[in-house]
Amino acid sequence: MTVLGRRRSPRVGPAHATPRAGSPFTGTGALLRLNLRLDRVRILLWTAGVGLGVYGSVYSLDQAFTTEEAIQARGALLTNPATIMMTGPAFAADDYTFGAMVANELSLYVFLTAAIMAILLAVRHTRAEEESGRLEMIRALPIGRFAPAAAAVTAVALACVLVGGATTLGLVSVGQEDLDLDSSLAFGAGTALTGLVFAALATVAAQVTEHARSATGMAMAGVAVAYLLRGVGDVLENTGSWLSWFSPFAWPQQTRLFVDLRWWPLAVSLAVIVVLFAVAIIGSHRRDLGAGLRPARRGPATAARALHSTAGLAGRLQRGSALAWGVGVFFFAIAMGSLANSLDGMLEENPALAEWIAVDGTDLTAEFAAVILSFVMIAPLILGHWGLDLLLLGLPTLAIALS
Image 1 (cartoon, rainbow, N blue to C red):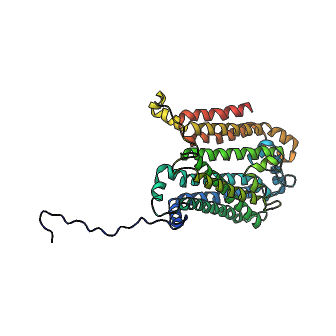
Image 2 (cartoon, rainbow, N blue to C red):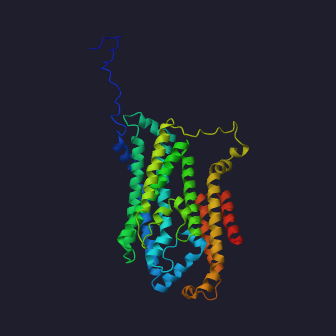
Image 3 (cartoon, one colour):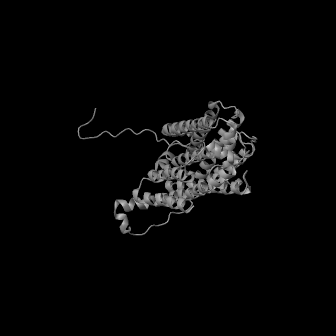
């Protein structure tokens, strides 16, 4: 019974210490389930997209190249440096097979897709979590020190494994006799490991900078460098030179899928994954939560006049992406323009190829350039800022004209 005018003091129980994590990995399972729940739609779309893309591409090639002459004519295109730059090493070019065509012309783009997916997911669950402040809240719970990182890496690894499995399933579903099971499994394993290599690279980048956009940009720059090294190395030597071996894209390609399968190049990917994750762990111990190994640069005290408008702010935020897209599309157009100018000479040197293509009364170079221009016009649409779209559209057009 409460006495009027007095307040009963609340009963205070015995003081309890804040529960502490029992091990550095306590809570990893719960965080992993959370990450997978948040990314279930993304992972499903990436997996389905890669699997259906591989199946559709292989099925289309199977329907288009039904004769041995057509396949050999396709192999003759691999003698052009621009083609090698855009595809990969020209294995079995002298005696081209359907399996070699799939490996030479499809593998690079599957590996590239897995790399982009892994980078986006890795940055999302590492640096983006720190930048938003969510990781600091999670670390206030009875969670082990390494639990968030372990859950993030495991989630990305599962996504890469699913994409690799979808790649193998897409290959074997076509039912083409040249696509043997062993090479199909190696194709899927190479896809998963390539994704993990760039996920590890993105994790290292997340230790260097404080911002998720910067970490993504650094990792994507690594993709561009790897692509360029592989391309230049394969041009120097059709089956891959020493320079190609500095690129993560070359390691799964050097398994010689559907030609002369060898598994040992995938061990290079495994070793690099271990080394990069070790570097990321060391980097995480040398910085504070939310900070980066490289301190952020101080900006000007006052904003520029152009930033006072919506268009100026959008341009400032997107100028890095615009520059990267512009340079990439420009060099793509140069390569394709070089290939377009060499088509007539290739047809003259290879009558079988000219007979198979059967282009009477048409300008093959102009037709090819028109198709390539329709592809490069997609880049400004992806970027989505009209002021920069004109630049991106003008650069490839000029590159094709100069080539």
